[in-house]
Amino acid sequence: MKISARNQLKGTITGIAEGAVNGVVTIDLSGNAIKADITMESIKELELAAGKEAIAIIKATNVMFATSKISGISARNQLEGKIVAVTEGAVNGHVAIELADGNRVSGSITNAAIEDLGLAVGQNAVAIVKATDVIVGVE
Image (cartoon, rainbow, N blue to C red):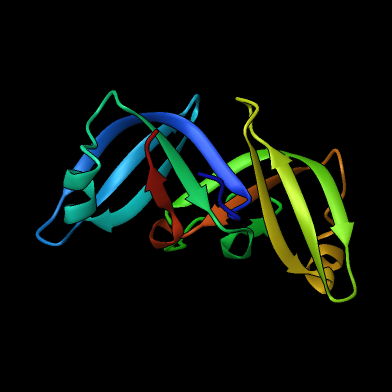
């Protein structure tokens, strides 16, 4: 199956915090961990468990960027990397960072944000994603 979500990050599940309705699945991306808040029904249907390979799927419009990690923020995922591409459009642009494991995270943000943050190829940056914006897939 092909999907339009730009970010498909492969990793290994390292833990699941189960709740009454939802659970938080932690996927290790070889150094960076990403958390996904999904329903317990989905966790059971996908047979998710520690040690199983999984894919964290994130739409580019759900990715925010910062120039360094932010403390005191509710978004659970802060993925550090180096900017490998910046493409500006008429109003919005795309920024891509490469994580230490080679995975890339792309986001769609305004040109004004790109300019205000001074985002440029070669700089370090942090992709920020809420756990509720992460979809979990398995092959």
